[in-house]
Amino acid sequence: MKCYETERLYLKTVTIPDIKNLQAFLVKNRTFLSPWEPLRDETYYGEEAILQRIEQEILLDSQEKQLSLYLTPKGEERIIGNVTLSNIVRGPFQSCFLGYKLDEEATGHGYMTEAVAKVVEIAFNDLRLHRIEANIMPRNMRSIQVVKKRGFFYEGTSKHYLKINGKWEDHAHYVLLNEGLE
Image 1 (cartoon, one colour):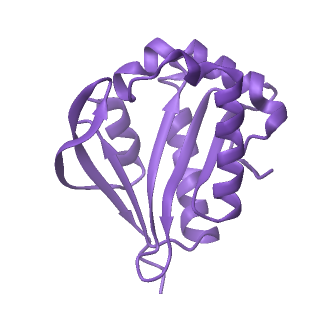
Image 2 (cartoon, one colour; image 1 turned 120 degrees about the horizontal axis):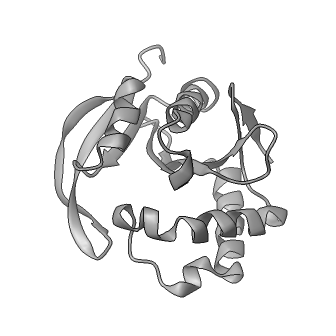
């Protein structure tokens, strides 16, 4: 298990014993997160699917293709969010995609901005990546504020980029470059 620390949070990879905490987070925020995610059927929230998700995340992390970290407030066990660096590509590209989600009750407290700052540090310093890309629906202003606070710049809009909540949605493309990487 990997674990990182910020001022108020632990960011850690999940293991099989975390299955109930992860399930509680997903079920609790099902309605809140639905406008920003693909359609999910009931099996997505079941223990078997969550176990498969954890196993897949462990595998992808071991292959350095993805790093998925779950946010836990210091002094608590509950999961309040997730930040993932996915589709890590090496070679001349040295790039990944950034995605995140946060518990409804935890919004508005700066937790995601704090977590994304740490994940950017990990991506650039530990993983030695050159580019982080975040694709965000233009109406998701809170999410756009997070990446802007971290220094991401707008690169354009991708039309009908992802099927979210049953509808093809445009996504604004934000990028952060590791200018110090040679």
